[in-house]
Image (cartoon, rainbow over all chains, first blue to last red; front, top):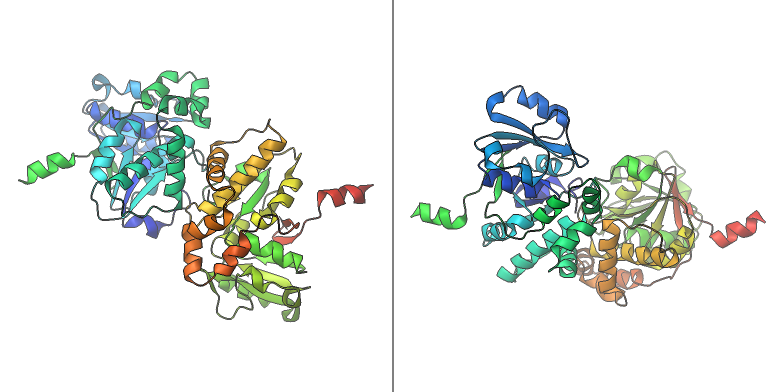
Length: 244
Length: 244
């Protein structure tokens, strides 16, 4: 439900699915779909700026938000609508957000981590199908507290995973998330407008982002986090084809 | 849903309700009802033993568990059935448990913290009624992950608080907990046997504890945690009477 207390040994051997529906894990599939070469998550604006100084300024953009607003001096904020091909194509994005990038930093030592939101949920489920290791669904939450939208998406994934393999053993958190999804399935746009963080973003004028983030299965891309870098995952079907 | 990531500044000014249904916050109301003078939570068995060396051995007991089992060399384990007047009356208890005492240590700097479980839920709601500060319901969870039984009791409290004051503003976590309680209300014994930790305790032979912990409103005592010590709270009705 939130990243802080999760025991390191528990997550290390599994595949971790990181969720920050509003908006980090909705933004980054779109950034990669628009041709961004890679994303480097950082935990604070000063660290993002320090990292920029070590990279090629021509091909690197500073991106992200603090408490819902664009950061002073950054190239891009945290609206998925900003991440169009003309702006991010071929670029390296240094990315910093209040909850999402913190969850990503937390997962730097895991075998495999990937980013999920409503926009790429189907592609994430496809990638997870048949994996023979623990699946940890890690909600970024909101300042260490659970968020309804992240938990609901977690429940959608639990539902999909159990449909595909009824022998899976969901823990209590997974079952709680499934109860939340059962409450909200079929009404994702209203869900995103009614949660604490959704209502906060609406109050800042980000309604268009809420509508965007509520689109289920818009993107086929699964961002993969490996060794501190996020790159687009190859779809399993393509991997199988390449192996032939 | 679990204590690790909660921001210190968020909890400091409020009243924190600590929940570890299986079994810390079910055990301690019973210990105080049986006449224990006070309880000192510690975060590890070595620290518990070190603390004992500084106190009067005649009137102090080492109590608690690690992963559901009594700790080697401790006087008492973590079954509420052990905490009878003949054993704990007048004693100071040094208490250590896997998740519960960790949540208590986390709350040592808050203005007021109290312990809640199904056995004292009504008394807790009575004490919280009309408080004019934030109420933080803190579930101990299970090794940093949510537990269904703690979340369900959290939902019971949210339900009761909203019944008493519909103007309260529940956050996302409170609303998630309420969904969980709506699923399980009316069947607490089955809830406690079906959750991960409940099933684990049953596998160790602690079924009688599960039955005990599922009794709603058995005890009128609200344990209060102040400056690292837990003592029985005076009921509000009694406080009002004393003030006259």
